[in-house]
Image (cartoon, rainbow, N blue to C red):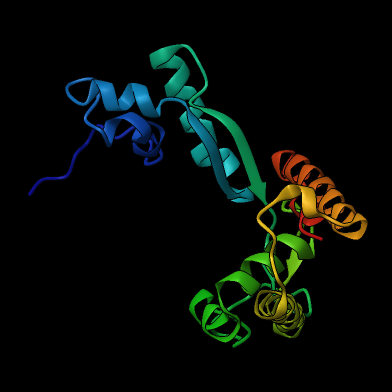
Length: 190
């Protein structure tokens, strides 16, 4: 084995990853055209100088256009006290531990609803567990309804209160969808 002497930048490989990983332009042209441009690149703040930059430079040099439609730049996740998480300090919460203790739904909702995605988040297992309790109430309410209600298949049998509930639900769907599409996850979920 010999060392390669002509290395530009270690990030260059990442910059061409969207097409080089497919073997394009030598193969998989149809797959590349189906996948190009990427809808969303979602990374941490430290990737601006490195990955986002080389993706943009390499894509413009090769194709004359941006490689992605949208960039979402996440804030840092710190411990409950606002300190950087560190194994040596012992304040780290692993993703696996959070998933095991909370469940996927509660963890996702907590991460998306606690703060705006671009803000720094102080991760609190206690606050995340509260989200799990709220989800459990919602789930139990649904199960109660499913068990004891007589659901009519006809839309004409709806009472005034049924129409009101459906109207509120449809308004919520419109509002939530609008906020999610604008990356206002923290507003759309709450």
